[in-house]
Structure formats: structure tokens, C-alpha cells
Length: 386
Image (cartoon, rainbow, N blue to C red; front, side, top):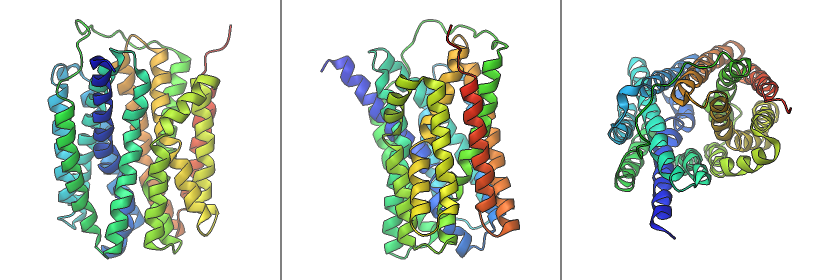
């Protein structure tokens, strides 16, 4: 193996660990810890939704800030700041029980995860593009699933030890600190320079691009209801603590190879059709999680959520970038804003609907409808064959 190839592999692995810490754990560990918080702190579904949305608001603002030109040349330092902050903020969640503190900490954690997402992608993708190994993007994004699986394994151990909800956050911080050290050692430089950073042109006034941007916001709403409340749905259905961790583990293990799998599908069907197909498959999981009783519904929900949402997130950005290849940072910012609004509104609406109806059935059906429309709109935005 050439040294350039091994360098690309090293950065892809660093990206995977960074995504596992900042996204798989930093953003999504809230899902398996949430039922314990709701039970021990008497948090209502509405309050749980507000805490989730505070995190997504932080992510939105962090991503928009990171998309600016001010960070040029500081990417590695800012990525490590985000990773370190994600670690510290996870610990702080376990050291308080005040609603205002939860909102503030999760907001800042959202900003931290966005910094890691944006800056680590620019570092990793520049190094793997230099040797023509774009296939390694699957490793990078697979880190989200890996982090979810690690957090599920952690929760399984804590459940066996009868630990409280706070232990979940403190152990998340300990695991994140280990990940921080690994990433700092492996990713020892920033993105490879590709000449002068040119000023990006305005985005084209293109109907297909507008469709993709709107569809991405609907996807943000549609996926986030199950991604936030899946384990709470299991708890509400009377599932055991061990089964809760199993459902979340299935979501993570399905997520780990999902980008690789969906890249194969997209090569055959085209990007827009693959996006739509993944949305339609996720609809089945979202409905199954609340409509099928016993073990099968939540397990199918976890499997189909994990197996689709990371790929849809990546494909949406790729489809938009195809429409505006000369303005990648602008289109990233706009897509992130649309996605961010969807996933901020989603948990609030779901929490309020769950509080009013007594369960998450209606909220999940609304989410499934959003996913259906997102898939259909994106499919309609595909370039027409001449």
C-alpha cells in the first residue's frame, strides 16, 4: 500500500471516530438515556422534545457559522475544540437536573457537533480526494452508526448495573475523551490546500435545487421523531431495559455499513431515486415502531431507521451539490438550514402531540407522511434524461 493510500485510510478512520463521538454519541446518546430521565426526573414528553430541539438549534447555528469563510486555515483546531466541548458537555448533562441547564448544555453540544461535522468532513474529504479514494467516505459517515452502537453497548452495561440516567452521560463523556485522543493523534493536519479559496458565486435560481432544499427540511422533521423517541416508545410499550438497548444497538449496527450499501444502490438507480427509496423504506420503520406490538415493531423501526437516515442525509447534500457545483459551502449552509428547521420543529411537535394523545402514534404517522413527501419531491427533482 502506498503511503498516500495509508494516509487516506488513516484520515478516514479518524473521521469515523470523530463522527462516532460528536454525532453517534454527542447527538444521539440522548435517545437511549431519555426514558430514564423522563422516569426519574418526571420529564414530560413536551419537555423531552424541547431539550432535543435545543440540541438541533445549536447544530443549525453551529453549521451555519462553520460554513463561513472565517474558519479557513483553522479547521483542525476548531474540529478539536468541537470534539473537546462535546466531551465536557456530555459530562455536564450528568451533573445537573435543572431544565434550564439541560436546554443550555444541549444547545452548546449541538454547536460542538456541527463544528466537528463540518470541519472534519473538509479535512477527511480533502485527504481521500487527493488519492481518488472517495469510497472511503463510507467509513467516515459510518462513524455515526458506530457511535450509536457503542452508546447502546454502554447502556446495556449500565442497565445490568442498575445505574441511573446520570451515569449514561458521565460514561458517554469518558468514552468521548478516549475518542478525542485518538482523533487528535490520527488527524495531525488540516485540509489539503487546493489553491486560493475563491469567492463562491450566488446559488442558481433553479427549481430542482429549491425542491431538494424543501425536501431536505421535510426529511429533517420526518427522521428525527423516531431518532429522538424510539427508545421512549419501547419504554412506553412496556419493553424491558435490555430490549431498549437492543433496539438502539440494532439502529447503530444497521447504520454502520449503510452508506456503503446505499452507494451501491445509488450507482444503479441514480442519486435522487436512491434518496427517495431510502425515504420510503424509512417510512415502513417509522410506522412499524408504533403500529406493530411486541418485539417486532421497535426492532424493525430501529433496523430501518439506522439503515437509511445516514445515507439520506449524505445523498441530500450530494444532490444539492450537483445543482450548484461552484458554490459548495453556500449550498451546504442552505441545506443545513432547511434540515435544521425540520429537525428543530420535529421533536417539539412530536412531544406536544404525544403529551396530548398519551403516546407517540400520531406523531410517528405525521413523521412518516413528511418522509413520504420528501422522497417524492426529491425524486421529481432528478435531472430528466435527454
